[in-house]
Structure formats: C-alpha cells, structure tokens
Length: 147
Image 1 (cartoon, one colour):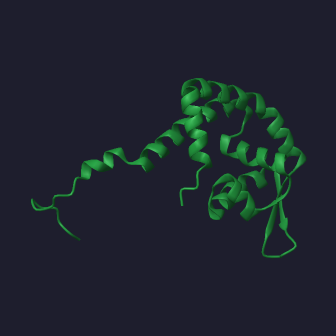
Image 2 (tube, one colour; image 1 turned 180 degrees about the horizontal axis):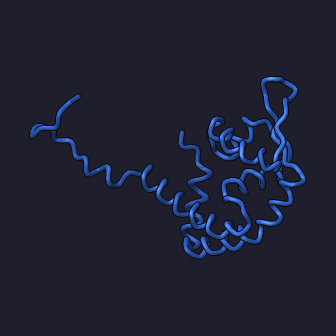
Image 3 (cartoon, one colour; image 1 turned 180 degrees about the vertical axis):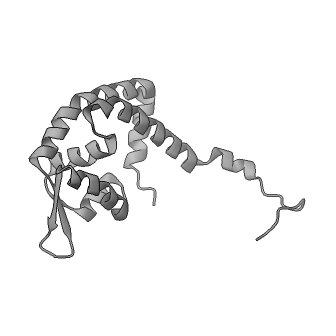
C-alpha cells in the first residue's frame, strides 16, 4: 500500500465536493422524510414505490421492474422479500422459466391505498422544501442517462 508523503501533490480536498456523496446525502434525507410521514401507515417509501409501480403498470418481469426503478436486480430481489412475506406481491415464473414475474396482490393494493395519503403529504412537504427549481433539477437528473 502506498504511503502518503510530502511529494504527493494530489488535491484530496476535491473529494469534499463529490457529486456521488452529495446525491446520496440528498437521497437519504428525502427517504428519511418520506419514511417519517409513512411510518403511521406501516410502510416504507421504498416499499410504496415498488408497489405503486406494480399497481400502475401491472405484472412485470423482475429485470424490467428493476430498470423502471433504477435499481440493481439483486437489490430489488432483497427488497421484494419483505413484500412477499406481507403477501403484498406475488412472484411466479414467467414464460421463460428463468424470468420471474412480479405482481401486486389485493393486499398490496390495499397497502398502497392506505398509505397514499401519507405519501401525498410527504410529497407536498418535500416539494415545498425543494422549491420549483429543486424539483425541476431532481426530475432532470432522474431522467438523464448518466452511463
């Protein structure tokens, strides 16, 4: 391992302005705020997001759902386990036995309906905190292909 010495002229202070760090900090703050509103409904915003997308789009292959959510398949798979335990989703084999299809159940739809007012309040609060410019910037970043 290389030891730092006096001849190392790298400006490590540049890391203080890391875009990745800033985006993760913002995401964590926003998630905590949504979760604080949704706590009373007994659902986390990450769970609500998955369920609401299934409610809007219908049954989806896991890979397509991961793409819509901007998640890695393995991360999505971990997030699906508690939803399946709650019987909010169903997971079954697709036409291709290697592909798993994810669908929302009646209990999952009820969870979305029950938690939607809490989500709406959180959405409005965060919208006010971000302001019009912040909302537009966030939507623009979310829509950009950064690969």
